[in-house]
Amino acid sequence: MRFDTGCPCCRDDFYDYEEWLMQRVTVIDHPLAQHKLSLMRDKACPTQDFRRLLNEIGMLICCEMTRDLPLEAREVETPLAPTMAPMLAGKKLVFAPILRAGTGFLDGMLELAPAARVAHIGLYRDPKTLEAVEYYFKAPVDVADRLVILMDPMLATGNSAIAAIKLLKDKGVKEIRFACLLAAPEGIEKLRCAHPDVAIWTVAIDGHLNDHGYIVPGLGDAGDRMYGTK
Ligand code: URA
Image (cartoon, rainbow, N blue to C red; front, side, top):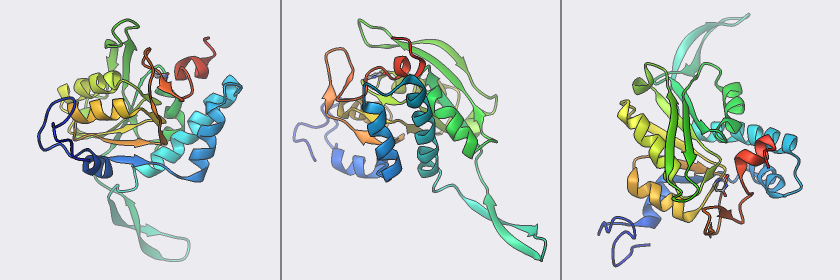
């Protein structure tokens, strides 16, 4: 979709949202991911099931997000013969959950890529302004040389993701990918405007945000549902 008036956020005349969406947003349509998300949307889904499902979806998302990682042939001695076998090559990974809900994906992702390092990014949402406020940041010293997979289940206003990406870029990180469970069109658009280089993987794109910045239909507050705090 090309907007005659340019991008609604930055008024960029060359804004072609559809083209950017095609290039940069992947909706993970794997039936297992879709099914698990539907179970999580149900307000009757118990806390322990919610947490387990988020973890399992983390694994599925991790598979999709690492699909293009480079491989190199290395010699391996099987019990029968030496052979050249493909092994991961290139940049190492950092998983970067935005606290607290982002940690819901972490164990699932680490199960698949146990050698990855972890960066924790503490941001909370000011309930009045909905702006992200930083309270914690701890990343591996060589984070700038790694591929960072930033994660937060809900891409709502986009403010937390934008702030987290800025913190990572300020540390010199050059390649960042963003993982979420649900995205609102408003959040995708705002993230594109601030950081068009960051690609997004999500399991669904929902209808809209309500006045409190919650995704509708969504699944409510992901952190509260994960930890049973409401
Ligand atoms: N954060 C959540 O946990 N849920 C939303 O719908 C939006 C932001």
